[in-house]
Image (cartoon, rainbow, N blue to C red; front, side):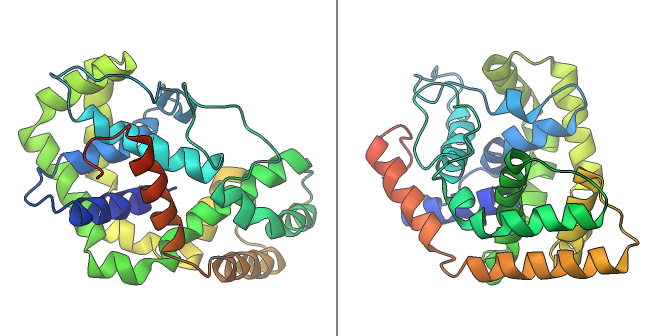
Length: 264
């Protein structure tokens, strides 16, 4: 899932656990696996490859919020919690985003054909899940507005940089073996690029389409292609007719696993 969805899920979990006045930096730990990938030398594969079942040292308690992110992604990608550090990509995955994205596969292949690009079935399956995750934020936008999720995430980044950078860098250095300078570079970039304005611009179908086109090298000035992409993303929205179901499923599974102590 994308960063806003992760932030919203954590807001909901904290509310259900009646955890009040939580320090804002926990929301940055919670999006760290995605945030760190801003750095050109840090891949998403690396940030998501952590042992889920590990005892966290008492000096790094907020690492639990990083693990929580990974558990959500496990359920989205695989349909279960990985016992070690993440499983390999499975074209037959029963994870939420893959199940929901299955009807999009043929359309994705057709769109790449319009663009004169070949795409394998494997890559089309991968892209189908990504579109579901891209569009999920838009499906739950009413909830995001109610919870002021964009503001919470943007303010949390600023708070962490101004008040908790030493603790934050030490925790992620221990967790990932990253250099302190790399983590600081990521946070400087986050301050510049993750703003209220930039996030609001992304909260449209067109914003998500451009993100998809940039990521997969599809042209932005082809009218036919843009129309087909718009229909694809509208179809993805229609496929998510249960905007709270995935949250409820993840909350139940993660609670039952007893991996995360703040979920009860």
